[in-house]
Amino acid sequence: MMHIVTVVGARPQFIKVAAVSRVLRGTPGVRETLLHTEQHYDANLSDIFFDELEIPPPDYRLGIRSGSHGAQTGRMLEAIETVLLDEKPDWVLVYGDTNSTLAGAVAAAKLHIPVAHVEAGLRSFNRRMPEEINRILTDHCSDLLFAPTDAAVANLEREGVAAGRVHCVGDVMYDASVYFGGKAERTSVIREELDLEPQGYVLATIHRAENTDDSRRLRAIAAGLAAVARQLPVVLPLHPRTRAALQREGIYETYAASLRMIDPVGYLDMTMLEKSARLIVTDSGGVQKESFFHGVPCVTLRDETEWVELVEAGWNCLAPPGTSQAVAECILDALHTAPSAEERPSLYGGGRAAERIARFLRARA
Image 1 (cartoon, one colour):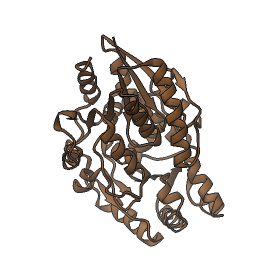
Image 2: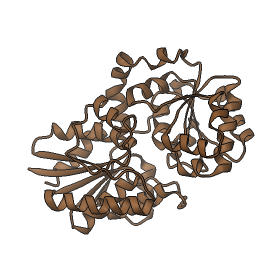
Image 3: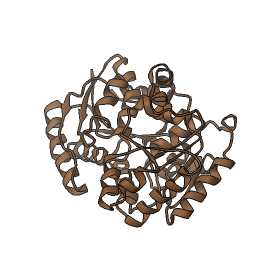
Image 4: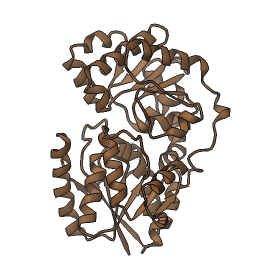
């Protein structure tokens, strides 16, 4: 019996693990232990995803929560190591680019436990981003690297990662979108609750530290979205970090009056908000892809993106938030120049990435 310990901790990872764990649980000869660091611990960012996405309750909850990068990662590393020493798994499976990802990979590698990394090979080429450091270090700790795209494979090849360790499997978030999309349409009433017309609003999400912790960028984003809201409603599910940043800057009340700020929502409600939006504005890597899955154009409020194929295909427009005018102009321009859903290229596999991952892992038993 192959024993896998899966390490998760943040919202994007819950979506990915929902796709992969469902397949692993149905694979003969495989047992999975789920470890949740609780990097995201707010009920709207954690518990609701386990409920909606049919993820079994975690076998371990570490209660790590917030902190500086060093303190948080260090506490995770110590706690994960203790679990791995007790469980003695055959593999540790990590996802994406969070501090939970890095801590899980390093803890396993130090104990000589093989590491498999889902969503390997992504690069923004901006090492000021903590996520970029996490990606690079995790990839070079890993024994199996499951890349979502050919571009990710090429990045790993340039860095000298042995080709036999790298497998292009497609994107597990697309698997989740295919599997849960119908459930969202059947069960979500978020659009009715917010009285939103299909294609009648812009959906925005902001949470990255490069935007929330930089006063100039945060103010440019808030003012730019407010300018757009004079023409089309802007719905903003507010991440706790973003809410705190707006309050710290003393501008929360100002922009709460012009933007439709709501609490964070679960995966199914978020899916419906995305599917029905006219345009999505985000700094989230996952939301960039989800917009593409649903055939909705996207503006990314960052200087670069790891999902370069979306920009090349015309579905994503980068808008570095230098000024509010630049933010607003890019968003308003995208409203009128976006491609149609029929023009979407096939980029992320056919919704079978999780099956490929399970097959590769099972072959290493």
